[in-house]
Image (cartoon, rainbow, N blue to C red; front, side, top):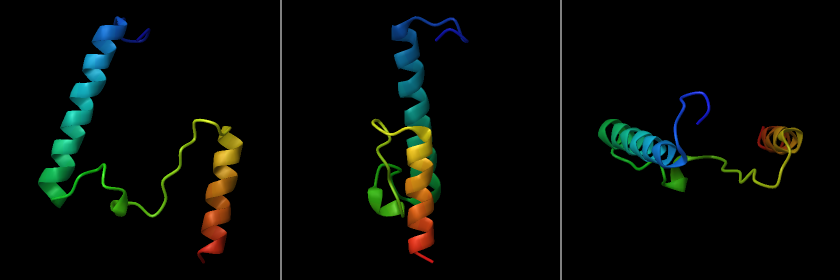
Length: 66
């Protein structure tokens, strides 16, 4: 918001527009939704994790799956 000098409402509109564009792009070229979790090997909710904790989880997963 600060960088682009947007109000909260304007920022929400930009985010929603970009999300829609991204979804349309993925749909067009893959025939799938980017929100379909079956398209991903790993999905993390990092709301309650530090960056270091997230990295450690990912590394643990990678080591375990190889």
